[in-house]
Length: 491
Ligand code: AMP
Ligand code: MG
Image 1 (tube, helix red, strand yellow):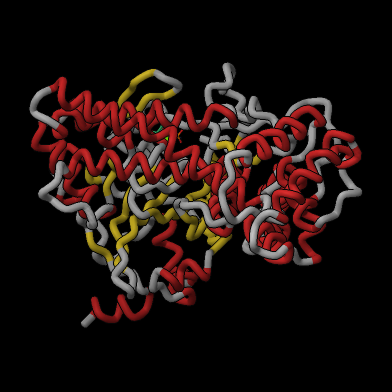
Image 2: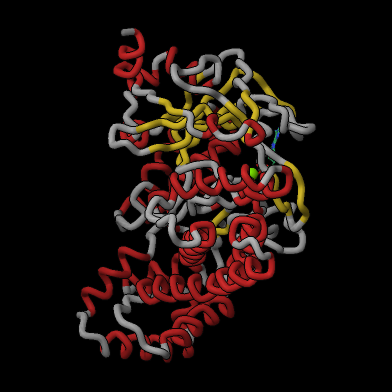
C-alpha cells in the first residue's frame, strides 16, 4: 500500500537491471548526505515525460532525493566501474563523483538511467572529493538541454540542487548536485574496463546487456557482437556529424566520455564555435588541440577502434579473423560520418537532392568563412533570412560568385525556393548557447543567486529554430576580446 502511494505521489518507479550484472561491474554506493539542500533548477517538461509529478519532486521530501539525502523506494545506488583513454593514455576510472540511482521506467515503458553527479566519494574517486561545483553543473544543464532542443542525442538534465556546503577548487565554491538522465551510462570505457580486467563471460554479459538495452533489433543468429560494434559506429557517426553541423566542440572526447547509446555525455569544457575555424579549441587542458573542432570525426574513429579492440574476443574465436572483421567495420565510420555530414550540409543550404558538385559548393563556403573570419552559425542564419547586408563576408566578390552558383544549384532542383528556405529554417539554428551568454547566466546564478538570466536563456534555447524576435538578442556575438575564450574541465 505504501509503495503504491509513493509511485502515485512522486512517480519514481525504479528497476535495477545494471545491479543484476556481475559484481565486478560496479560497487554498491549510497550518495553522501549533504547539509542543507536547495532545489535551484527543475526541468518540468522532462520530469513529466519521465512520469514524475513535479509538485511532489519539488517538495522538501522530493528534493532530499536529488540531494542524495534519501534513497527513493526501489533504487539501489551504485557507482559504475570503467576505464578510458584520457588524451590517448589508458587509465582506470569509474564514477568518482556520481552514483546511478537506478533505471526509471516511464509510463510508456521506456528505461532511462538516473544518476546523481556530485554526490560524494566512491571507491573510484582517487584523490577527488566526489563533489561538484554549482557553475559547471549549471553549465552542463544549459548545454545539454540546448543540445536536446537542437535535435542532438544527449543525456538530459533533470534538476540541480545546491548542497549548502562549500567545496574547494581554485577558490571556495558552492557545492551542487546535478541529476542526469541517460539512455544508459554505458561507455566505451565500460567495455575497456571489463575487457582488460574481467573474464570473457563477463564481457559477453556486458555486450548482451548493451544489445538488449540499445539494439534489440539485432538478431541473435548473426554475429551479434560484430553487429553491436557496427551499431555503435553508426550511432557515433550520426552524433559527431550533428556536432560538426552545429559547431559543437565536446572538448574532452576521451573513450570514457563516449557512450554506447550514441548520446552526447559528460559536458565539461565543451563550447560552441563562433568564427569558423577547424582548429578551434576552447579547453584549457587541450594544449595540443587533440580535441579541436576539425579533429572530432578522426578522434571518434580512434575511440571506436578502442571499442572494437575490447570486443575482439567476442567477435571471432580466431584473433586474426576478429581483427579483420573489426577493421572492416571501423573503416566504414568515415563514409558513414561523411555522408551524414554532407546530407546535413545540403539541408543547411536548402538542397534536397544530390549532385556531385555539392561537396565543392559546401567546401568553398566553409573556406570563405575561415578566410574572412565569419561566424559559423550566423552565416547560415543570415543565408536563411536571405539577409546579405550584415556580414563583411557577404560583401566580397568571391561570395557574390559563390552565391550565384548556390542560387543556380537551387534552381536546378524541382522544389521551390520557398521550400528551400523553409528547410534551411529547420536546419540552421537561429541561436546556439553563445559562450558569453552561458557565462552571463551562470555568473548571475552563482554570484547573486539570480536564476532569471539562466531561465530566459533556457527559454530561448528551447526552440532554436523558432526565429522569434526575442532570439535576435541572443544571436549577437560577444564583444571583441584580446584573449581567446577558455573553458575548464569543471570538476
Ligand atoms: P570527467 O573529466 O568528468 O569525465 O571525469 C574523469 C574522471 O574523474 C571520472 O572517473 C570522474 O568520476 C573523476 N572525477 C572527476 N571529478 C571528480 C571529483 N571531484 N571527485 C572524484 N572523482 C572525480
Ligand atoms: Mg567523464
